Image (cartoon, rainbow, N blue to C red; front, top):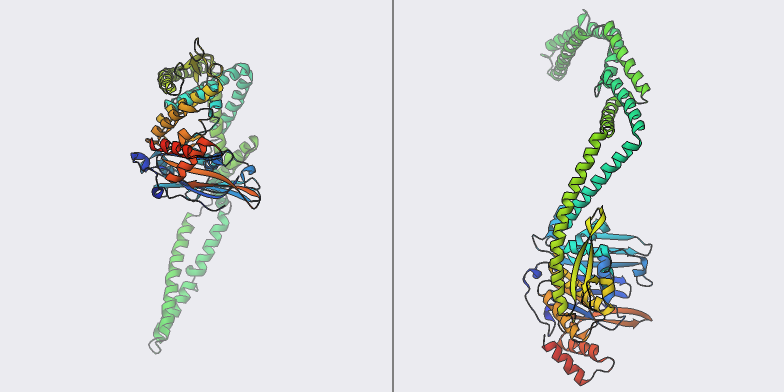
Length: 576
């Protein structure tokens, strides 16, 4: 399929608006090759609210899947286009000069100006590779980085919204409580680990006492040896010197006599030769160079004799010291054999044994261990209580905000509520479980989301939750993949307005089948599935004003597009 890239600033009929900070960091370009039905596709994106529309099965959601793949989602070879060996997706972001994303790149030595280029490849053999600004990175790094830039709400997001764990994560993230949640988790694990140590100490007290006695004996033996680091090497060097002291002294004296202490020594002979050549150099200047070399030899010989005499003064036959060194070597070797170690490793063995003895002492001290468990429990309860108080405030605020949005989505009788149920047993995530509830949709008191809402209502409630939580999110790009499924009529127009409002603050990309939503967009891409050489391929085209009228008319009127339908589409676009 031919490459298709849109020039947004030049698209006829597209509205240009200034959204301030969004100009400075956003998703700018998406390039896809051999991914599912896409052979080659490039989307150039801009600020504001952008929609992807097209017939069912054309591949709109495939583009979102490709983006998610590039941002670190799990992948399998089924994503590779038939008959191809590799799928590749590239994503380019523009970054704010002091944004958290740019700071992350600097901290990881991946900075490349005020932009980020993500590239991910998947081979037919299942091997996946990822790059960030040209440098290889792990998929986990991709996910960690992309979470600072993009928030994707899938078309089945309302299903995950029914899970209690997902509800808790959503509340904590919306209220910016993740750091406090981490503190609670750390405190919980510290308390749990200490409690397990106490239980183990209570059950294995006799075993621990025996081990402590064994380690204490080992520490006493090693400490009594007093072998310092490097002493074994020093002892061996000294023993070698003392054991060969006689040979060293004899050899030094022999060298001294040969070189300088005898009447016919080398020094004497060299002096005689120097004098003779000195006299002869008056007759032939050629001897001057040879004479200079000989004088240099005499100087070197003199220095050697000086050092030999100094060494001879230091060489000492000391049988007593030799005996002491040999006894010390035997003691070290004996200790090393006793503890099945090498002599040079004994100092490290002592340090490890002392640490183990200290640990065993602390473990064996049941009273101290019990006090430590109590201290860890108090620490956990303190920070978990802080989290409970913060969640209580956040739950009330989230309930009010989502309820307000629900009024606009034909859920006027419904009230969104976030309940916090105390746990019988404290957990790593806190003292309570989070539950999203709805009241008055079918009358009566608040009930869990899964039991109180029908499928259509649940889809609208999910959208309300995502709109509210996205407003508080720090990520600049929001993506909605058919979260408006099951919605129509006037409610669809309200949904379009909500996403349009979000587009004034963030970059919003939405896959939709609703003309009311598409008409509210700043930009519109049409995704089509074509048959070429017997194979299906998807392509995308940035629509101008005429193209948007035709596409929205198709979405309104189905197979046959009439003049009335086109006028209706034109009216919808004109009212935006």
